[in-house]
Length: 190
Image (cartoon, rainbow, N blue to C red; front, side, top):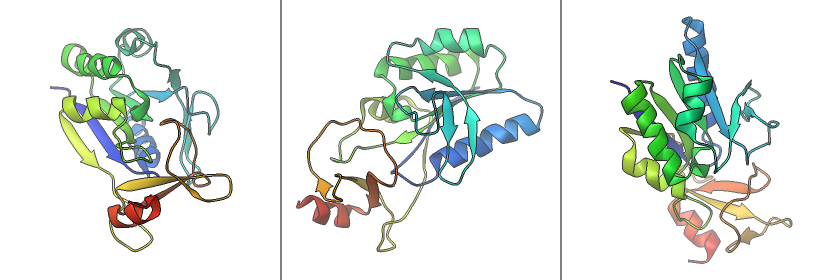
């Protein structure tokens, strides 16, 4: 029976690297994966998944209006596995569509994304995945102190920690730093 998996963490934990490695493993065994990425993330180029260590692959970009069940039926009817990068940008309805892919089409879905934003709040897509996924897998990274990083701060143009702003702002190491909860609280003045 196919399942919906959610691999979650903070920034810079290697989620995209793990996704690309898993997709490679399918290809290496003669199976076809279908890769999807949120259209909001164009850091590696439009419709491209990229990792900080230089790995990358083309993917189908989706936005909030995309019916993922229909897209997968059309673009990947025989895909051995569906991989979704930047899953925090999914809508709750799209998470249900991915659950239907696993339940009704029998295709496993591996979603990779952030759990919380820089304010410590769940993304709507992540909240739905935490509620609906059959299997939750934490991808771990560390804070500068060596503890497990579970939070992220957003940096402004001058490097100062921001406490307010839009939930969605795509960026990398120049914009975000992963911290343990204790150091996040200190950085946020909480």
